Image (cartoon, rainbow, N blue to C red; front, side, top):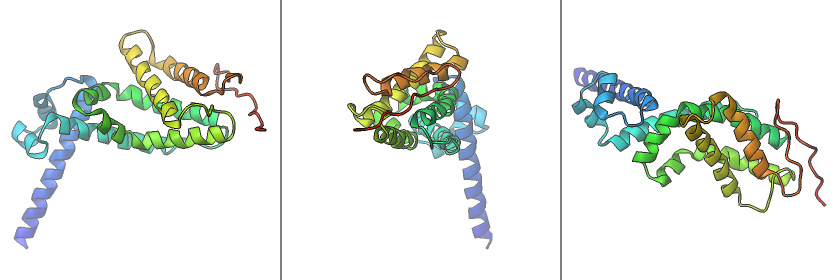
Length: 213
């Protein structure tokens, strides 16, 4: 029994250490994408030996921190109303999703340095699936263009979001205006050729959907 208790205690200690390291990595990399493992270990209250006992490389630490951020982001996105007019749903998604990107832009910069493009796409699979479903519905209802692949349209949205983060970092855009800029840009890109682009000032005011012949 004592042996089992000892094993359970060691496992609990290990889980606490891992949680502390991932939390510290999220905070340190969220402030500075170049934060070192020594900084992260100090913030977590553990030694480098302990850190390396759980994570073999800086890339693994960054991956864990990014996974944590995206898991929490998915919890937020789960609350977004994706029903009704696809254009309004898209605006709601951008409003919620942009704040997540804004908060995690330094962490994303660290991930882009440490992780492969394929791994970053894999980590973003949850948010991408939401947008794919919304774009497919908008196309079926005639309010989103059908002459471009769905995957390309999803990538356009995410590229615009990430570009907005870069513009903020460069001082050419403020966070409060980012969601509106992203929504206006993406709706213009998603609107079928020849159809009027919905107004975005003070909220999206979409034109009635065209009936398909």
